[in-house]
Image (cartoon, rainbow, N blue to C red; front, side, top):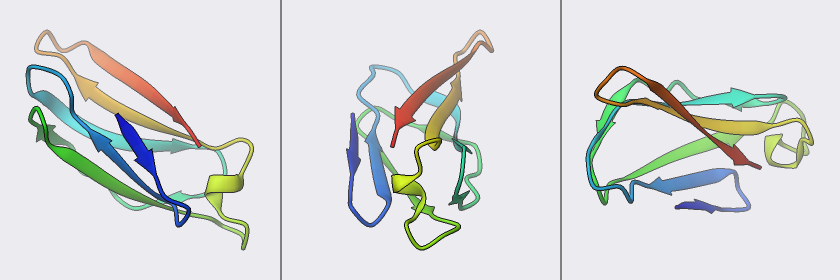
Length: 85
């Protein structure tokens, strides 16, 4: 589940039954994303990320921007979850 604020903060809750490994965010398109180091996220835990724009209108309004949540399954398969902004 993902929640967004008008100020560019996105909060994602881990609703699965097992921990996710090497979880990190990536940003595609116009804007800036603070450094996100890979980490394990347990069921019920929430992650927050703040997006910043390169212009006054901000990345949240950029038509080409997409946030991507990335993680690995136990068999080393990488999964990607795109979050439209």
